[in-house]
Image (cartoon, rainbow, N blue to C red; front, side, top):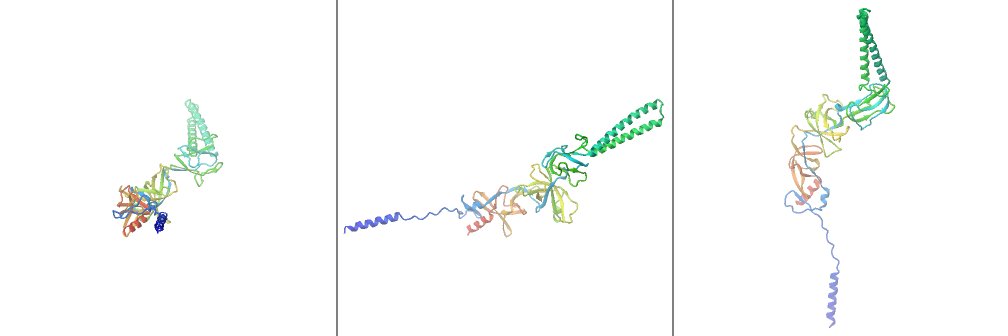
Length: 383
């Protein structure tokens, strides 16, 4: 009978040990979730480590001038008022090249030197005419002295005067011809070396010249194109329906794909008087300031014609908009992890951006990527 308490004690000890050594249940990891319920309707609150935040991107709504309509297709080109296309006025052979594409040159800089026999002939004709004029001038002075001494008759004096005048006219003709061939008025060594100079300051945009190349005045392409890259033109193809809003003097906003986050301000300076029968478009030219050198000729661009009023409205990406029926909404990040759904009223909507009358203020952080995800989360949290 004494064994019974001992057996009971052993059973109790085994049971206690089994309970102590039992496998513990795995702890559930903390999963970030939306804090529910939200104190405010239309507001989502996420913990700091919520995985949804990695799929959300925001963009500040910047104040910008409002365009009148959808941007128009355009192409950036040289400003013809600040561009020189150079050809050689005389035939010759290239002996020196002093400029390459991309070089910055000043007005008067020698770009190339040509061996031009015609220039040497013109210089020789001028020297010959000047020598003949000097001889005729001396002959006239002698004839005047002899006439005063009554040695020769008046007709001989008049003949000497006519020959002197003819020789002066020949000098002027030879001088003008040489000046036409060589407007700079200077030649390199040898007397028939023509110096092709830049008439304006700018950048060498094109070079169609090589050493020992034979050039002629009727060359179809310019040897050099020098342009002021700080001044560019934007050629806009205007449909007939948009012609009333594209007028000279209107401000314009130029956008290029190379710089999606910024725009360039310009002004319409010319609208073609006729319509292209092939494209059914009217070409307009917008002058744009390019002193930063960001824009390049032949870039494709979009041009938005701005309203006459100087009013600026918040500009947001079109991808941020949520369309529900006839209303538009956006999500605004009020603080880190807190997003508010707001109804917005649009002034103008283009393919890339929308301009907001109300609902968003300048500087607000608008959700540009992930608005649909937030909208789904908000719908599920409200159930």
